[in-house]
Image (cartoon, one colour):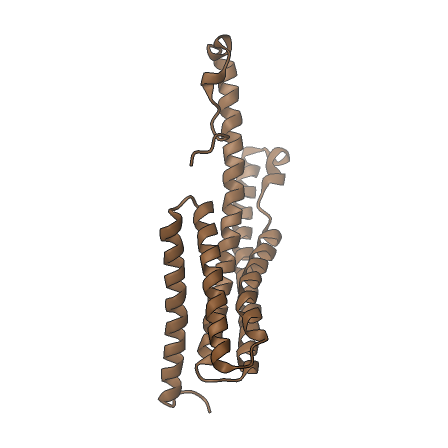
Length: 217
C-alpha cells in the first residue's frame, strides 16, 4: 500500500504555488525527509523482529535437540537458558563491533568534510545497537523457555514448545514481512516452514547421534 506521507501531492497546491520552483523543491525535500525517517524506523523495527526470530528459533532448536535424548525438564530448561545467554551475548558483541566500525567510518568522513558539529549527533550508537540486539534475541529466546517451564510431562512439553514456537514464528514472520513490505503470506510461510525444519533436523540428528553412541554418556 502506498505511503501518502513519503511524497507530497502537488495536485493539491494552489495554482500560483504549483508554478513556484522554490515552493515545489521545499515540498519535495520535506517529503523525502519524512520518507527517510519512516524507512529508518522500519529498518530498526525489522532488525529487532529478525533478532527476536533468531533467538526464538535457535533456542527452541537447542531445546528440542536436548529433548530428543533427555526427557527431564531440567536438562531442557538449562539448555534453553544457556542458549539465551550465549546467543544474546554473541548478538550484542557482533552488533557492537559492526556498528562501531560504521561509526568510525562515518566519523572519519565527517572530519574530512568539516561538518562535525552539524551531524555528529546522527552517528550510529554502538552501545544502543548492542543492547537492542541482545534484548531482541532474549525476548525471542524466552518464548520456548516459558512454554516448557511449567510442563512436566515429556511428550506434552515437546508439544507445547512446538506449539508456542509455531505461533511465535507466524507472528514474527508476518511482522517482518509487513515492515519489509514483502508478500506477507509467502514470507510468513517461509519463516514457519524454515523454523519447523530447523527444529526437526536438530531433533532428528541429535537422536541419531545418541542412538549411534557417539555422545557422552
